[in-house]
Length: 174
Image 1 (cartoon, rainbow, N blue to C red):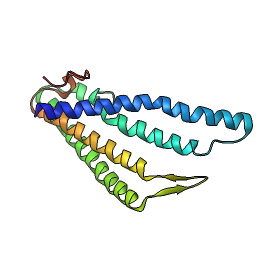
Image 2 (cartoon, rainbow, N blue to C red):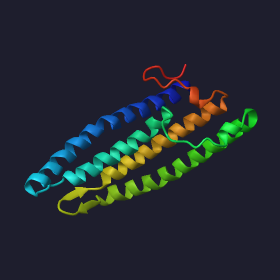
Image 3 (cartoon, rainbow, N blue to C red):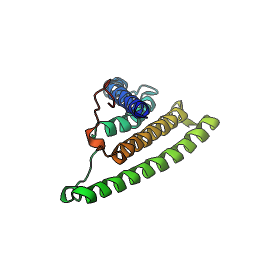
Image 4 (cartoon, one colour):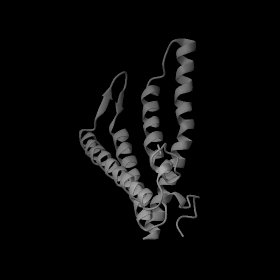
């Protein structure tokens, strides 16, 4: 079981790293288009659409990796006032809510990706640009976030705080 949990975390960390690297791709897609608009009054065809796809990949592939590293924002006003059993109970309730919310997002994004892929959904703006790859990315990122929340919940239920899990790539769970 530890191998599975560690494997999910490693995949999520890899996707997070990939999404971080894609920021450079976003710059490469946006800067020439902005320069072309400024200097020549012309935009580069497809640059805007490619930027949106890169941004979607960056955000949705980065979600689960950020969760592994505990980099999401949290409001802990209540948690800082609790200790012992009450803190554990609130933590478990919060984690269950996160699992359910992420699972609902995953369910609807999978349905949307499936329908979009079957229809070969396209954007018909200045150029024809496929929308279904972005929908698949959203579904994949949502599923990986759901799996990460499940990993966190399992680790918390085992008694070890999910906040103390080693998240250094390559080390995994002991």
